[in-house]
Amino acid sequence: MVWQRGAVTASAPIEVDLALLGGGGAASLLLAALDRHGVRDLRIAVVDPVRRRGQDRTWAFWGHPDSDLDPLLSASWQQVEVTTPARRRVLDLAPLRYAMLRSGPLYDRAAEAERRLGAIRIVAPAASVVDDATRVVVRTGDGGIVRADWVLDSRPRPPARPGRTTWLQHFRGWWLESDRPAFDPARAVLMDFRTPQPARGVSFGYVLPVSDRHALVEYTEFSPALLTDAGYDTALAGYRDLLGLDPAGLRVREVENGVIPMTDAPFPARPSPRVARLGTAGGATRPSTGFTFSAMYRQADQVARALAAGRPPVPEPAYPRRHRWMDAVALRALDRGGVGGPDFFDRLFDRNPAERVLRFLDGVTTPVEEVAIMNSTRLLPMIAATAGDAAHRVRDRLRPARPAPAIPAAVVGGPPIVGRGSAAR
Image 1 (cartoon, rainbow, N blue to C red):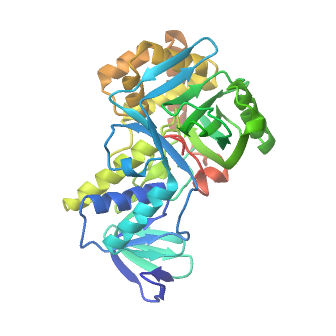
Image 2 (image 1 turned 90 degrees about the horizontal axis):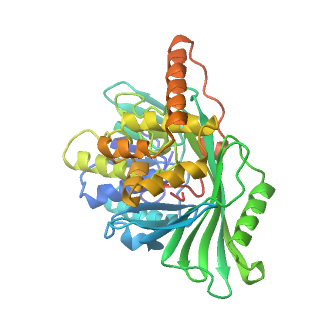
Image 3 (image 1 turned 30 degrees about the vertical axis):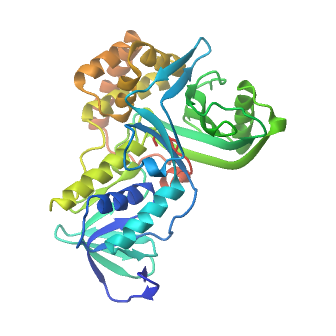
């Protein structure tokens, strides 16, 4: 087993208070939070075969200005656009703002936090995790052993059982550089539904400008199946043309791809007494939208606060149970064609303050606000989806458990390169 405080080979078991399995966004946010909250005198190990550096993904999210992440941001916007074929709506997000965080600065901050915390980095995959309710034994892929009081596991994994509805949020983005001013750096395009809509699903484009000549332009689908490489490029080229951008004056500097699960299948956050999961594996991905980043940030902050106070490092559920039920109903309505995606989101933003919609998508609204949100949707299709979901839940209880369906490797075998709320949301 190779562990790093330098490059030392250790054959004896390593004893720690806390082991982090995985080293992506969720683990990086946690390391930064532990450092921010002054957690010291804690023996920490990070078990991951890859030390992540540089730009391998982009997150975009909303929140209040002047957060601890502000020095790391590539850009932020007080205004965003939501566009349908019928109209273009410009939303003022105050007191929130929409922000872009690329992975490089976060990985750098996590590496500095890791150094300040005196953490041990074990450069190997976790092969097995055994919890006897008093200690957790992690065996690594190269034969090493880590014994920990607690394990926080952010490695991607499939759900515990099939969902009643399983879609994917999948996307490709081009980082475009223009010869002349082509973008409005004061305003992001959050959702542009003028893209051709798939036969089953929802598509939209969005634009995240960092200057008047440089922006991430992306095509996204919510649907059951992925496109081919050529399909994504064709869709992106079509959206570029829809924006009126001249391809002769553009250069594609980077390409980002990603896949995020959109399913009401369960992702158990506590697989055993002393193991908790973070990130998508811990339920941080919002099933109806794919948003993830804000929930990951909340999880990291909750764990760090708990450890600083001497409490068990177990985060709260990423979303209230009522939100998971609403997500299941919304996914079913979209999947069965009861509501159309452009119409669904158009009505939400048309009948509610932008701040309420954004906080709802992040899972932090009150029940009173959620009644207003539900009243914004078309009543009869949502009633039908609610009844169908209830009937399906009854059938699930009566029939034997089935294995979860296969989810693309980009979701369960590795992190998305760009996500929404995630990579980019």
